[in-house]
Image 1 (tube, helix red, strand yellow):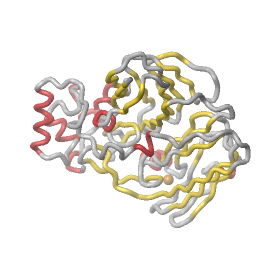
Image 2 (cartoon, helix red, strand yellow):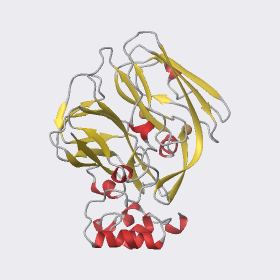
Image 3 (cartoon, helix red, strand yellow):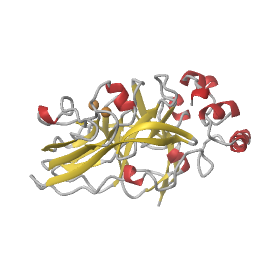
Image 4 (cartoon, protein in one colour):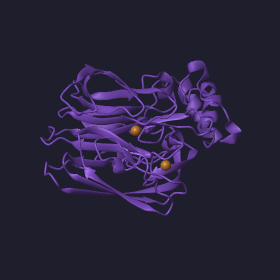
Amino acid sequence: MSKFRVTRRQLIVGGAPLVASVPLAKLAFPGIAHAERLSIHQGHQHGHAAMIGAEVPAPGGPHDLDHLLYPPEPLPHEPGRVRDYHLTAIDKEIEVAAGVTYAAWTYDGTAPGTVIRATEDDLLRVRFTNSGSHPHTIHFHGIHPANMDGVFEIVNPGEEFTYEFPARPYGMHLYHCHATPLKKHIHKGLYGAFIIDPPEARPPAQELVMVMNGFDTDGDGSNNFYAVNGPAFYYAKYPITVSRSRTVRIYLANLTEFDLVNSLHLHGDFFRYYPTGSSDFFEYTDTVMLCQGQRGILEIDFAHTGLFMFHAHQSEFAELGWMGFFNVTD
Ligand code: CU
Ligand code: CU
């Protein structure tokens, strides 16, 4: 990307949609062949205001992110049951936008990493293997002893550490590396979703996980791309199909570095937003704003079928990849 050293401000100058102009697309997607860039450009010229469908320049296949989007099934309350996970830190080049790779540090090869789920009072046991080239840890949000906090127990390359503590409180949490420099270890990709189910199970729903993130591909200390669950524009290329007859429940977390806040805005409907998801308190809204590390649970009961957009309400984030669609069916 060194050839394309531009700041994010330069990237979004003019406020045009990301792929709206050839120069912009060229800067943002240096890997895309000229002909493709041209067709993106022409697509815009012909008035494709909303970018959706197969032509969207997002990397990957239709089910590549299923393991990040759909969480493991919840298990009934059974105090003391052991929930085993094994996470491995791996250095990996990942494609964060069409033709744009990023030298990430990952848990299990993706950024965000594996979704961890437990029921309150489970004994969570996470074995962590550091196969990366830098010292790392796993720091969980939630309640746990000091020696399980992932701050002082640095795990060097080639070493292992097992985190073990009762899972509580119920809600939507997150985990991330806490080695220093902290900002670097997070923006390189070491974070993920951590769900704890309440003792009394939540009503059944179509459950989704969305971890908001960004990628600084030119190393200038600001993000060049934004997304949920990894690649820019992924859910614009592959809309998420949901059924109108069942509640959609989204476990949402913000792990975006550099920017103070991120947000999610839903078109065409309202949702209940439970901050942290650790109580019954909710707000009824169509837009939520999250600071770094904030998270919560959204519940949507769609009134209408059709295609509905969701995106960061910071327009520049949306234009740089953080947007997608629900395909609401009957
Ligand atoms: Cu780290
Ligand atoms: Cu944190």
